[in-house]
Length: 332
Image 1: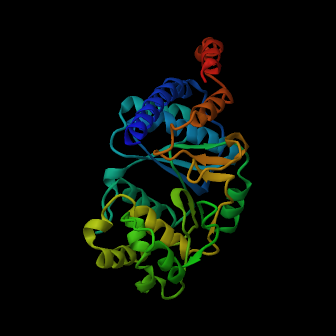
Image 2: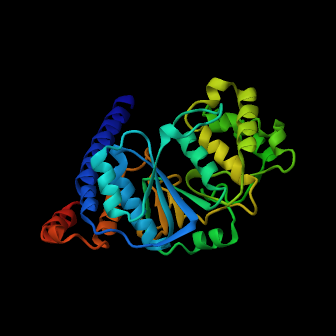
Image 3: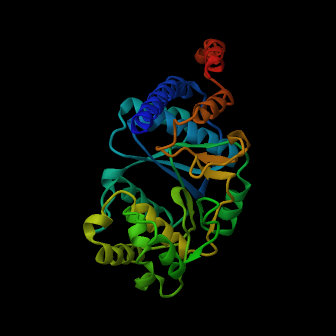
């Protein structure tokens, strides 16, 4: 039985490597599109952390998002790996793009890994704008009317699942999470939320994903985030709190205290295969292709190709487009 399972795991791993290679081969076409069109708006910031290895994915994400959302100020937070050629591509394809360096962001005693740098950049931006955190592995397929309404009314949001469609009481949450036997930092923190001073003024918690979320203008400040971080660390330990995933936990806590926060309607806004939806992906509005599931099927590659095909190409790229499309359409 174990041999059979091991063989299936190896086959799946090979299939995912092949799918990853196919995606990367096709995704490079995004660099040949004409500059994306959108309406500049200083009241909305669309922020993404981007690195050299995720540049093509990000260009697909932002091109698809702005096609379906249409306005804002686009900012790239350089994780430290973007080179001069990457910067040139970004500035050519995204008019008025603002590029900030993560190394210049101070986290004020909170964990220092890259996503915390992003959260503290959000902190700077929410003083003057509504901030949308857009992970680089997102594809938007239909008009994002719900996101426009959230921005219009200055209400927070996060992508999530059918399991947690509404904010949940932290006392109820404790009884559920402690049964999971899960040592991930988010679960460890959620088990002690009922003991935090942070939740004494209101015990509702928005359980979702920070990969796609909206921070209302003026929704939190430096004292709040530092107090929250220090208090959780004192309960679960500084080393555990410094591990990957704590930034998402902090984000959800901060959003929970904003005015009328909500989980976006699932599965129209979803994290790919987390959980599985029986509806076809091309019927969705926005999908976050999380790393663990990104290449388990060919959905990401197919939708990314649609994004590329829907963008006007530079003249020199138009000549090779028919051949590239025939190759793409021939792939399973």
